[in-house]
Amino acid sequence: MEELPAAEGDEADQTDRADRADRAAQVAPAGQVGDVGTVIVTRALTKRYRGGQLAVDGLDLTVPAGSVFGFLGPNGSGKTTTIRMLMGLIEPTSGTARVLGQPMPRAARAVLPHVGALIEGPALYGFLSGRDNLIRYDAADPTADPRTRRTRVAAALDRVGLTAAASKKAKAYSLGMKQRLGLAAALLQPRRLLVLDEPTNGLDPQGMREIRALIRELASDGTTVFLSSHLLDEIEQVCTHAAVMAQGRLITQGAVAELAAGTRGRLFVATPDTGDAARVLKEQGAGDVVITEDRVTAEPPDRDLADVNAALVTAGVRVRGFGVERASLEDAFVALTGEGFDVAG
Ligand SMILES: Nc1ncnc2c1ncn2[C@@H]1O[C@H](COP(=O)(O)OP(=O)(O)OP(=O)(O)O)[C@@H](O)[C@H]1O
Image (tube, rainbow, N blue to C red; front, side, top):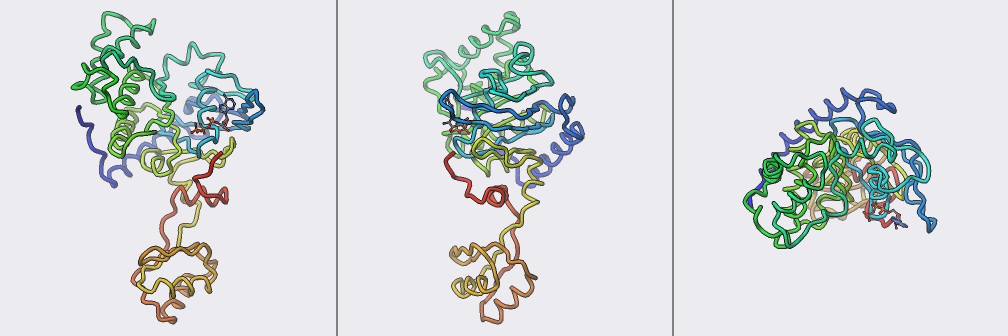
């Protein structure tokens, strides 16, 4: 199987992501309904299932054009239900959803040809080769010209790095290769929007890296990518923007860098005297003190950190490092919900 290019280094990645975030911000200044700069807008979107379960509760989502938008939430928080409403697969109970400027599900026929979707794993025929699976997908599209089918399929296989494995039966594919084949199917036609539901679910770390690299590459062409995930670090690694869901409700949304920036990071002390450091930090008013090997971390207290540092030194704690770590999206989530991220919905 062909290898995808390795993920770029952290620094290059950050720059690239910042560039894309800028571009997305430029085309979506206010994110109003119907704004050409937004590809998905929902207002008070709500879904109550027949059994009474309120799966999505008054969701106001704004996805800027050109963004890699992470739809983040623990299992059961309503992500798949939202995606199914956006794709016109189920009707909302109330509220509205517009995709590419058109109302869903009413305009599904006009909208969906411009949207590539990978929802709940690709439906593949195991006894057919990867290539033949794509030929079937392409043949099912009434707008696809049969004369150029082989060229389109070859280009899609190449795009996801499956050319060398194209003749293998799909049942012999690894999970990562199956996901890539699903992506290839979504890419048979040029798309303005890609919607990926948990694209790395069940993959090993290498498979995850490959799919993330592919997502970055797709986004660099200007395609808006909307992906759901229950993995915070995944969103931080690939997304320019994110929305955070919990129990059917939107907790927050915006540029990833800004979401975390609004939250205070954790105070850390690197020291061999962890026990004493933890005691002093508590005395100084720090909360949630955690000891790990030769580090103590805590919620910073509401006082000058220079005084906290001085108190440590006065107490004889040998301080090798002291500071506040940059807040992660996880810190933001905990600050907003008062809960850890790994909660069941
Ligand atoms: N068809 C259905 N009928 C009734 N309840 C449902 C149905 N589908 C989902 N639910 C419930 O709605 C809530 C939201 O589920 P949903 O699948 O949208 O969440 P999710 O964030 O995508 O989670 P996961 O990552 O586990 O798929 C859950 O409590 C779930 O049990």
